Structures are given as C-alpha cells and as structure tokens.
Length: 235
Image (tube, rainbow, N blue to C red; front, side):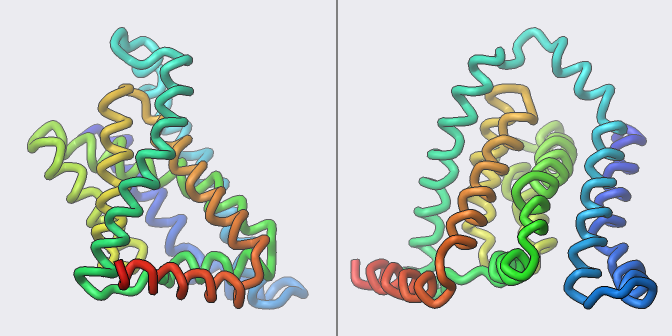
C-alpha cells in the first residue's frame, strides 16, 4: 500500500480521537461551554483533516482524471443521481430485514447523537453533510475497499470495508444497513472509476437525513418512526 495511504489513515484516526485532548483544552482556555468546545474542535479537526487528506491524495486525483475508462462529467452526474436512489433502496431492504427478521430497532445512536449536537449548534451539520463523507469515502472506499478489491473479490471487499465502517461508528448491530450502503458505494466507485461519485451520494444521503430531522420536531419524528416500525412488523 502506498505510504501516503497510511498517512491518510493516520490523519483520519487523529481527526476522530484528537478531541480527547483538545476539547477539554478549548473548554478550559476559552469562555465557552462544553458543547461549544466539542463543536468548535470537531469543525477544526474535520476541516483540517479534509484539507490534509486531499493534499495527500493529489497523485490519485491526477491519475483519476487521466484514466481513460473513468466516467465523464455527464456520467458522474447521472450515476450520482441514480446512486442516491440505489442507496436508499438498498438501505430500505436491509432495514426491513433487521426489523422483521432480526428484531433490531431502526434507531441509530450515532445519528441521534449527531442530531442532538446539530440542534444545539446548527453549524455542526457541516461535518455530517460535507466533511465526513469526503473522509469516509476516501478511507473506506478508495483505500480499504480498493486495496481489498485487488486481493479478493467485489463482495468480500465491500462487506469487509462496510463492517469496519460500522464498527468505527459504534453500530455493528446495523451491519446489514451499513453493508448495503457499502455495496452501493463500492459499486458506484467500481462502475465509474471516480471516488467523487460515492462521495456525492454519501453527501446527499447525509444531507437529506440531517435537514429533514433538523426541521422536524423530535417527538413527531419519534412518533413517525414508531408508526413505520409497526408497519414493518405487520407486513
């Protein structure tokens, strides 16, 4: 694996865990509360992480632009639009299996935590809507899936990268949902030869979830989810 890929992974790990040190420092040094300290450092670390990772990945970006069989701009737009529908369809099937066959609730603690912070500080939505999809697709699709795909096959590489993604997000119980999305994202990457396509689809999905949940009262959203879960159980 190229040395720059290891630096990308190290950067991502630092982005994820640097808050353990720097959030308390911000809280101690500045006249802000703990939530603001968390939000400010998250924004600083994720934006810095995106900048560093994009700089490290410049050789790959140049190679992708010059790759003959890579999708054209028109196909990038087309597959990005189709990809959103494909990902939601796959996620819906996986969610139904989790609820109806496995008895796993639809609630995502990771999503709930993100929305709790976003409601307190709307600026935080920059991370799940833009910064996180860039970092995650480069890490989990471009690097992890890409390297596994060279040594195994599509399904093994896609599922293993999705499993790692689920574990990183602290929700291994939702491996089917993460796995279904991972399969779609990986397919889009392989089909178009452009990592920008799964990045756009990932951004679109996250943005829809964040904006919808942000503009709906949490109690009303919980009621709608309970009704939806009842429908899944009855059919």
